[in-house]
Image (cartoon, rainbow, N blue to C red):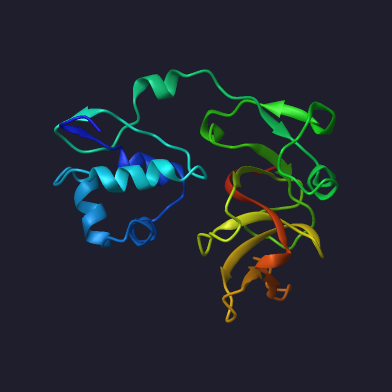
Amino acid sequence: MENNVQFNLKAFRKANGLSQRELANFLGVTQGFISRIEQGLCPMPDDKAEMIMANKDWTLYIDKVENHGTINLQAENQQQELKRIPLVPFEAIAGPGTMVFDDEQVQDYYEVREFRGADFLIRVKGDSMIPKYNGGDLVACKNVKDVLFFQWGKVYVIYTKSQGVMIKRIEPAPDPDNIMCVSENKNYNWFEVPKSDIAGVALVIGSISLE
């Protein structure tokens, strides 16, 4: 990276739904170190910036700001052409078991500036995620290439070989080879899924609620 150029860490972190602690754990540093970088008190080390940029599952926002902190996105990022995000049915995932879709599978396209990092939209089914999501709500999803890396406490769309497609909050399971799938609706029990049963994963990065 160029001299006196800092990584837009706070914008990147918020765009990807990461806490300071989660990012610190990924980079192998302390939460306090992340906080100091975001306040402009110390620079982003080149090797840590390279670790972030090497993770293809994250949306990158790099702001070339001279000599100070990292709060705002670049104007050019705000003005860039909006991405058309496909809305797909559950069946589009459950059929071929992939998170990549062709035009025949797409129900509609949306342009939402806040979801510019999303790869697809999908409608919530049922009431298992109430009150966080209601049936019919649209959730914006970003594909995750490494199905073994989860951000605990985040909501994911998961395609499993045995149970099909589900939207659940993911927590660590007692068995490290499994994940715990959590419904926000207290009437539904938590359950474990083997990581080996997972064929596709997408992180939920936002939603549109319907009345």
